[in-house]
Image 1 (cartoon, helix red, strand yellow):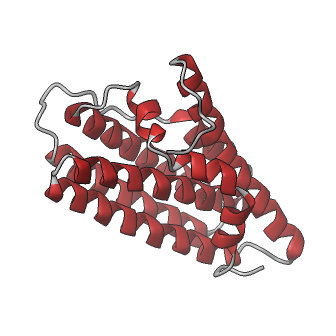
Image 2 (spheres, rainbow, N blue to C red):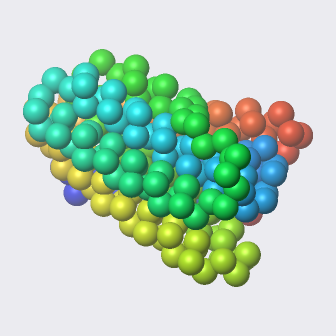
Length: 211
């Protein structure tokens, strides 16, 4: 295994969950079926705030300077995303407070840099699919500036996921470490997926179909 192959290997391993997380039902789960522009933007902002807080925590817990630097960089990206999404949000009273969710709880619980960075890659794969749904929502709404905003956020997230895999390479000393990182990445995807299923089931929606 190496840094270049790692994200694709995790994506292949978690294909079913990622496909379902990349369906149009993703925004239904995130917004509680309130698919209005203020709610969609507010939920996006809350997610960016949670990611920034989580990466700050991972940087503080890092075992190495390289892992700390990577996580600090990811936190800065997410803070910029939060600022850009809130700038696009017209509603002054929208709730954009950090909403960590299962995947961020999982990241914070990892015991070392290898599993933390592996989980960050898994989180990035989930975020990529989620951001694609935000793009699609605003394309369908003919809100082209907002669609372009989420395209930018998706590109940033993809770059950070690749950077997490590159940082992971400095932590992995052999196949056993790569395997632990892959397990952490897959479990991060599963944490997001199980939360998604629970949210949809709570609304009486079938999470297993992809549309």
